[in-house]
Amino acid sequence: MYFWIRGNAARTEAEAELKQREAAITQRESDMDRQIEARRKELDVEAKEKALAYRNEVEAEFKEKRADLNRLEKRLDQKEDSLDQRVARLEEKEKQLTTRQSEVDDLYAEAEKVVADQRATLERIASLSTEDAQAELRRQVEDEMRHETARLVKDRLDEAEREAERRAREIITLAVQRCAVDQVAATTVSVVPLPSDDIKGRIIGREGRNIRAFEGLTGVDLIIDDTPEAVVVSSFDPVRRETARIALTALITDGRVHPGRIEEMVNQAKAEVDQRMKEAAEEALLAVGSPPIHQELVKLLGKLKFRTSYGQNVLTHSVEMAHLAGMMASQLGLNEAIAKRGALLHDIGKAVDFETEGHHAVIGADLARRYNEPESVINCIEAHHEDTPFSCMEAVLVQAADAVSASRPGARRESLESYIKRLEGLERIAESFKGVEKSYAIQAGREIRVMVNPDSMDDALAATLARDIAKRIEDELQYPGQIRVTVIREVRAVDYAK
Image (cartoon, rainbow, N blue to C red; front, side, top):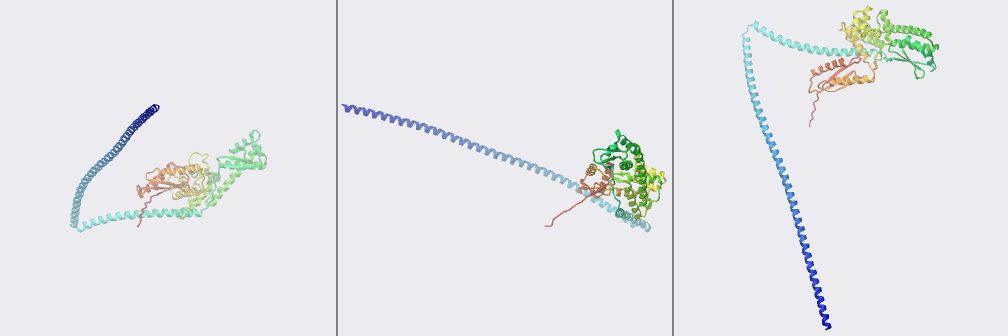
């Protein structure tokens, strides 16, 4: 009984375990079905995504192909339009050719008519009498000779102009080589050295009475500052400045500085300066070899020793001009004495232009006329800046000598600012003309070289351009001496042998 009960219990237990296993298997099968279903759904989703991506790719490729077809279609349309335009141009050219052919036919017909007229004229001439035929032949020969003579005259004039320019350069060069005059640049101040700074107090005087008396008697400005052992004498009048310098030097040497002594020394200095000016004028006349002139003109000529123009001493400049003008006159067979005298006195008006209104050339001509100088000398003075026309060839030489002397390197001094402004002004004027590619101011602003476009300008226009630029420079700029304008037109053809 016991064993039977245990057997039933074991069977029951086995059946329960079997049911559990069956339930587990069923559960596992259910889980596997769910997993299979989930995997199937995932595969479906992946398949749909791939299909969608492929579809998008196909659509993009289709759009690109479509765009290429559109572009190709546009290009074809453009080519078609271009062909239509070319056809239209060809038709237009065909019309033009037809018109030109018609014009050529008309010209040919006109030429045949002219030939027929000439033939008729020849037939008429052939039927003329001997005298009429000779007259007709003489008329034709005269016409031919007239044209030939005009051509020969033009060639000879061009040759004479070239020879005259070459000869003028040779004469001026020879005169410059033979004439050597020192160039000295002067200033508007003079520095007087002092033995010590103690003397500055004596020069000033009590309450400034000495310096006031000195400036009142000499007409200059005394500059007494911290400059060691020096006093500056300033004045635009070089004669007054030199008089003050001599008087102040004498006062310093003497040591007695008071108004009475100042007046005495100033009077002595004026006499000394007057004597020095007279001696300088006489030396200039002797150096030039000029005949004696009026004593008043001698005094005025001596004043030029202390007169400057652009830093150039006027008396030295006048002596140099006299040598140059005389040498050029002797080379050309002109009156050498008139050329020298006119050149020496050409700036005589600058001796009194501080006191008289007007241009120094006009003032100088009036002075020369007052002291009975020859008319040719007066014309040299009055016309050297072209204020009046030239009445003698010597006046032309005086003007040329003035330009040569003033344009020598170092002869004149000007500020850096005015020098740069003149160079810029020259290039600005030259480059303002049509056809000019580039311009260069050279030789310290005494020459401007202008490069022009050879395709837009021929040789005749280049010569006209040079004259126009020179005229503009004369009208718009201020400069010492003269400025040369050179227009360069160059054509180059380059090829290579291979």
